Each structure stands twice: as structure tokens, then as C-alpha cells.
Image 1 (tube, one colour):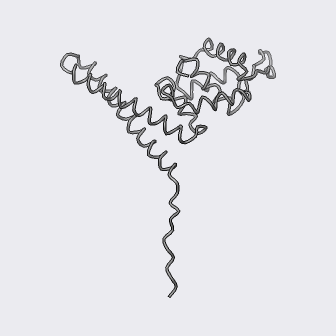
Image 2: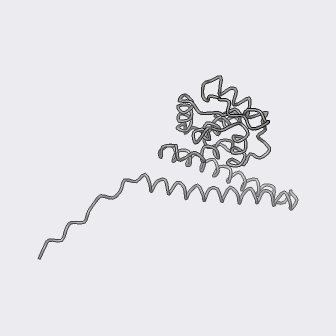
Image 3: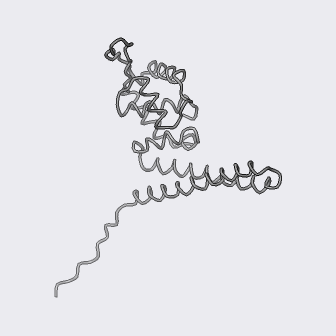
Length: 193
């Protein structure tokens, strides 16, 4: 799931899980929800949709034509697509917390079981802590050899990584609180006088 096509497939399946959509609407939602902006072109989306159709993950139906316009093809997730999406969302391996996939996975966390969410969040935190250590080491090695702008860029990267680690710590704490069984221990009743 780590490659761009796999991430796009996961994003499309997740969005189609909510409602059927036509290609233009899918592109608009992917760009808005995942911030891919101009990066996601129709030249990327339509080959992905065709592959998903061939694999039986989605179906396509011609919608009603707009006056004077071409018919819009409406895509719907299939039962196999739902199974594939659920399987992908339960994968908590290293690809789940990589930069390319984490945002898409996180956006559909509501459909992920709590233990898997926690593993993914902990994996992402470990990855970001590693990145943080690398930023710190690079800054200490190169502080005297780089210009002020490069140093500012390194500082920006360091602050971004620190901020994400804090955010992940808060999410992990919240997940752990939710997973803790409620305290059912009742204090003993006071005997009547």
C-alpha cells in the first residue's frame, strides 16, 4: 500500500464507502480531503479507476446525462471493494505510518479497530522521533557551514517534527484511555445505622 497508486486506491475506496461518485467529484474530494492539490490529475485518477474496475473493487454505471453534456459515469464500491478496504485498513505494518500513506489512513481511522489505530500511531511516532533525532544531528553538524536560510529550513523541519510528535503523543494517550476497561470497582456500601 506504500506506492502512490495504492494510496490513491485506498483514498478512492474510502470515499466511495461514503457514497457513489463520478470521477470529477472523486478528484475534487481527494484533492480537498488529502491536500493533493494539482498533484492528482485525471491522468492518474482514471487509470486507477480502470484498474479497480478490472479487479472488481468498484462498479461503474452511466448516470443521467446533463443537458448537452456527456453522461457522467458514477462509481460505486463493491462488496469485494469493501472487503479490500477493510483488509487494507487493518494492515498496521510500516507502510501505514509512512508520509505517503499516513494521512489517508488517518482520515479513515473511524473504520479502523482501536488496537490497529494504536499500532499505527505508535509506529508513526517512532518514525517521527527518528526524523527528529536526524534533524537535531544534522543541525548540530552543519550549523556553522550553512547559510541562514538553510539553517531556518532545518529549524522549520525540526519544529514541524516536534509538533507532530506532541500531537501523536496526545492521540496515543487518548486511544489508550478509550481502550482501558472502565473501572467497575464500586466502593462498599455504607452500612445503615
